[in-house]
Image (tube, rainbow, N blue to C red):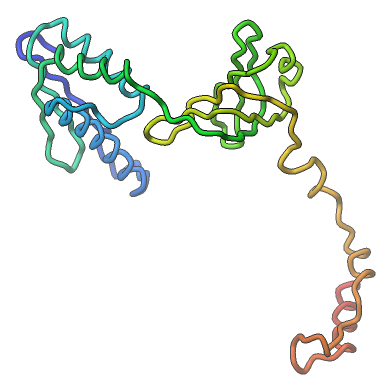
Length: 231
């Protein structure tokens, strides 16, 4: 930012053919910066940006910093391969819109069941964290005695409670939760037992053509095939 008419540039990564990241990455990059442009366009119109609470908090901090200059703010969103988007606004007024949205923000709350590994415990506040099967860290606020949950640290647990989601559908936390031990999705050793080929062949039953199969192949030919496998 510079004094006078403050200019804020939001630039996406340059396209470089020497680093082929694929069309999906390019589309995602374009979408992210389009969303930024949309957010500032809505602020120009006096509307609240349609985004998550963490994004609103980051936007609020940025606008409050820009407001210290007490000048008009020009935001330029630059996406390689696209026309530049410009938005002109006063940061103090825009920050007021965002702050008002944050004060009135109410996440969607629905009943939910979440499973994962319990890895962080705070028995004083009753706040815990689990990591689900996708590696996402989720805050959990227990309804009962926190110390009863502490013994489950490092184990897989099932959490039943009131899940809070942001407007984008991202799970923020599970409140008023009941935490219990849970069995792993795949029990250890279930698919790791050694397989003996001789035992598998010995347990094979003679082929019964009456039950269907390949036309023209009889039981003797099937037995000969199995014998060839054994040798």
